[in-house]
Image (cartoon, rainbow, N blue to C red; front, side, top):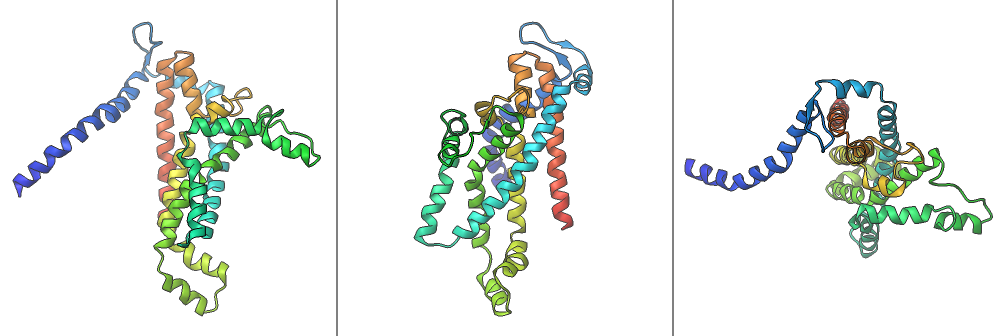
Length: 283
């Protein structure tokens, strides 16, 4: 038995090595370099908590946090209920459902940059699809990406591109619900809404938590789509924390400050995740 355990441990070593090299070491380095001033050209200089103190008076940092939570507060519920609605319509195993599952899941296979570029064309004021439809119907075109509020809502709207991924999660959960429970509810006189609310939705508890956690994680680390769609503009209207860290580190070369923001970002994401888990346990 001991020999078997030792043999299994040997097979774990390559995975542990690469995980340490590409995951653990970068995470530790982020915490370490956050206490230094570094611009990639000159040697690192230890400055203690100065990078963290700088955030307190950095209005653009606080703006990026507000934008991040706005995008999460608007995008997560839309994706959750949209993907759940699609799953309820398509979870049955028939040819019609399988075809439409593939259609709705297909966008998830595209790179984020390619998807955002397509959305940017559709939002274009002069040549975009949406404004072409509005003009055809007799309405005035809209500045989708040129005004702060419109740009923020456009980013949220473009986020429905990934609803097919969460739809597949919900379909898996729905297919695992015993059909006998739904039949029993119908025999007792429950209509479709009552059956869903009192039987189906409670039995999707674990799937709901998984979709919510993954959706929040995707929202918090959203970068490529926003970068390609708006570049964080107009002004800083759509600059979330991930994009602001990128700007600070790789365009302004404030590496230590960018790493310090990454530490705060990590802590905030951890707190949000723990809050979601706590609320789910209380239910």
